[in-house]
Image (tube, rainbow, N blue to C red):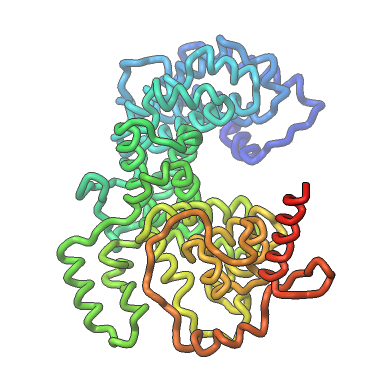
Length: 501
């Protein structure tokens, strides 16, 4: 009873009085002396709970972080027994508390980090994961195993390479995610989605989040795919992440955390493998889409491109649910109004690269973000649409934020200056155009397919009035003239100067 009460009182203690430092060191040393003995499970758990709280103090860890003590914790966490199965349920609390202690000690002690390399802790953690990857009732063990693996791969770049190649961490961690999501495959890269199914449990969600974070470290340098096997592995992972985006956690906050980590990981996937985020409709879904299209009025041309049937977002015969979730996620991050660099730029970068590489994704996003322009009376940055919000970001004080927002819209416009100006206005686009050397017009370096003209009657009527506002520049004599003419005059002067040299 006293032990439980003490742990309860100090469960949220992270700062300690310096006057008691020596006492805490002695207590740590005493705990390890007890743990090495053959004592009842309840006593082991009690000692480990106290050690977990004490291990939050870096100073206390200095004298007790030894190879011998680390091996004691590895033994209790079942990390030293390669052929031992996890059959004794009574030992699970000891394993979990030992892993929690190791997480704190590795995080707070450089000596422990070095000992982790010497003891090959990453390999031991992967072995433990393989023992429990298909077990439904040991999520706590998986969760803290994954957390420790994430910490090791965060603190040691060498471990990332070991995890990726030697320990086959990519397929292993992907399988952990499959298990957490209870995925049932309907095709090589397609999974069954039950929109009416229950949300993930808190334990499954936490386990998935830790696996996503560990996978991020394992794949952080994976920009290019060199082998067909690599391409297949990344496509499987991307398909699992698509499934992740289409399910929810126990709470709205947990769902956002889950999706945020999925977005971060998708940013590491080679862009050529992101085609699995969309998939063709089944025969039944295709028939439903055709019925829906017939039901729409003939004058709703743009709206007929994208239809919603049975909770499925469809575009051009492709299931766009995952992309739609990413778009909604991006808009929510914009609406938060803070932490744009950490919270918004990853999803904006992801959508930009997807749009640049995959035509159907770009066309769908163009349809959602930049629909045919009907409101020609208000300034582009005024309003509450996604376009208005992104245009406002084009003049944000954070250079990285405004650059990626402008780049996203530019790609949706197929890098055509005239199209970008139509949707954003010249002043908002000036920064990107100046950086690209496109102030006088033209288009970017990437090639895009030609689409039909989507100008509305409202825009066609208003377009001639735009001539009231032109980009201007200074001629060599100091007078103001249209920018293109000013640039031409400077070019003539430069050519003349070159001829006389």
